[in-house]
Amino acid sequence: MSLRKILGLLLVATIASGLHVFLSDRVWEQRGEVRRNIETGYVFPSRFTRILALGHKGLYADYLFLNTITFFGGKQMYQEKLTDEDWDYLAAGLEAVTDLDPYFLDPYVLAEGIMTWENMRFEDANHLLEKGTKYRTWDWRMPYYLGFNYFYFLKDYAKGSEYLMEASRRPGSPSFLPKLAARLSYYGDQAKTGVLFLTGVLAQTADENLRESLLKRKTALEGAASLEEGMERFKKEQGRSPRNIEELLEKGYIDKLPEEPYGGKWIILQSGRVFSTSKFADPLKKKKTEKKNPGGKP
Amino acid sequence: MNRVWALAVITYKEGIRNRSIFGVLAFALFVLGLNITVAGFFMREVGKVTVDMNLSALTFSGLLLVFFVALQLMAKDIDKKTIQLVFSKPVSRGQYIAGKYVGILLFVFVSLLVLVVFSSATVSLLLNLYPNYFAGFSWPMFFLAVTFILVQMAVLSAILILFSTLTTSSFASLIFTICVYLVGVTIEDVVFYVVSGFRTEAISPVVQEVLNVVAYVVPNFSMWDFKLEAAHGLLIAPARIGLGLGYAAIYITILLILSCLFFQRREFH
Image (cartoon, rainbow over all chains, first blue to last red; front, side, top):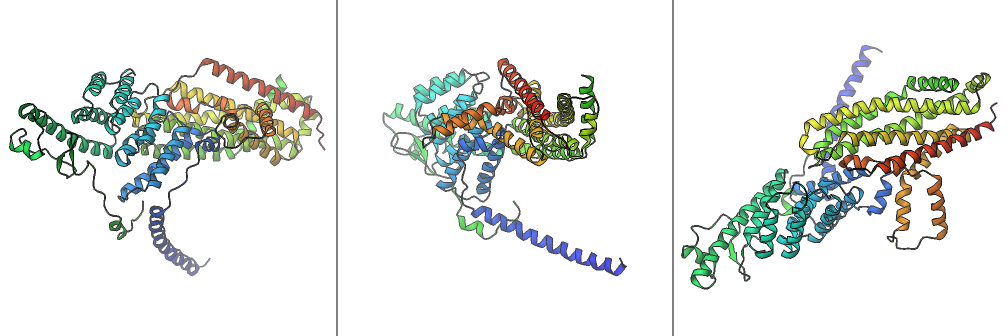
C-alpha cells in the first residue's frame, strides 16, 4: 500500500471517528429522552418469571430489582411525579423480585422507604413486608417496619404494637422495642412516639438520600412533639385547648415556634394533634422546567 | 478398569487442550468483573448479589463446557472415525462409554475448579470491600452450592452421552441435551404451578398426565440448586443434601447403562 493510500485511509478514519463521537452524543441524548418518556413497563407475573429464570432465580431477582430501582431513580433524578401506573409498575416489580427471592432484603427496604412515604401505598408495602416477615425469620426489621406503618400511617396502634412485640422477640433487636410497643398501645397518637420510632428506623438506614428525608421528618416530628407538650401543659393549666399555635406562644407555653423543615405553617387539627400546612411533604417541581434542558448521558 | 482410566485420561487431556476453554474462562472472568462493578449498586445485600452472580457464572461456564467442549469430545471420535482405532484395541463398548464419561467429568471438574479459584478471589475481594454487607454469607454454604453445580454438570454430561449414542449428528445431541436441561430447570415450577389453584382455566388431564411422566423422565435440576440458600446463608437439612446426591447418582447410573445398550447396537462405517 502506498503512503498516499495509507494517509487517505487515516484521514477518512479520523473524520469518521469525529462523526462517531458526534453521533454517539446524539444517541445518548435521545436515549435519555426516550427513556424518560417511556411508558411504564410490564412486569411478568411471578409465576411466569420463576419459570423464565431458568434456574437462576437469584440472579434474575437482582436484575429485576436493578431495573426497578433504575426506573425509580430516573424519575427521581428529574423530579418527575410518578403516575399511578408507575407506582403499580414499582409494586409489581418488587412483588416479582421478592417472589423470585423472598429472602432478598433490598426490595423490602425500598418498599418501606418509598412506597409509604411518597405514595401512601401502605397496603402494597405491608403486603411485601408481611412476606419479608414470613421468610426473613431472623430479621427484626421486617415486623418493625410493619409496626411502624400500622402505627404511623394507618393509625392502628394495637396492630402496630403487636408487630413491635414480634420484632422485639427476634434476635439482635434493639432493647427499646418492648417499651416502645407498650407506649404505643397507651399513647399511640402522639408525635413523640413517632420520634422514637423514626430514631429506630434512622439507626438502620445507610442510604444517604433516605437518611436525609428521614432526618427532615424527624426534625418535623420533634417540632410537633414539643408543640404537643406545650399544648398538654396549656390544657392542664387553662382547662381548655388552645385556639391556635400562636396562643401557645403568646401565653408562654413555648419559647419559639419550632422549625418546620418542609416550609409549612404549624396548625392544630380538630383531633387535637399538631400538624403542618405542608403535610410534611416536599413540594414537587413542575414537569415543564426540566424539558428545557434535555439531559446528557444517564 | 485400567482401560477405562486410560481412556478417561486421554479424553481429559483432549478436553484441556481445547482452545474453547479460554473463551469460557474469559466469559467467567467477564461476569466476575461485572460482579465487582455492579455490587455497589445495591443498597444492602451486596453479599447476596455477589453470591448470586458468582454461582450463576459458574453454572453458565459449566454449561458452556458441557455443551460445547464435552460434546466435541464425544463426537470427534465418531466423526473422524478414530473410534475404529479405539475398537481395534481390546476395549469393549461399555468400557468406552465409561472411559469417556469419567474423562469428561474430570475435564469439567478441573476446569470448573480453576474458575472456582477466581470466583472465591472475587468473593473475598468484595467481602473485604463491603464487610458490613455480607451478613448472611458463609463459605461452607458457598462451597456446598458449588459442589452441587458440579453434580448438575455430572448429570448433564450423562445426558449428553446418552444422546450422543442415540443420534448420529452431534448438533442434534446438543439440541436434545439443551432441551432436557431447560425442561429440567423449569419442570418444578411448572408442576407446582399446575398443582396450585393459581390458574384461571382448568388444565386438561392429558397435559397433567404428560407432565407427570415428564417429571419422572427428566431430572428435577432444582434439587441440586442451592444458589438461593448460599446467597442468604440459610441452613440446609442434611437429608436434602443426601437425597440430592442419591438422586443424581441413580439417574446417572441409569443414563450410562442406557447409553451402553444403545452404543452396543450402533454400527460404525
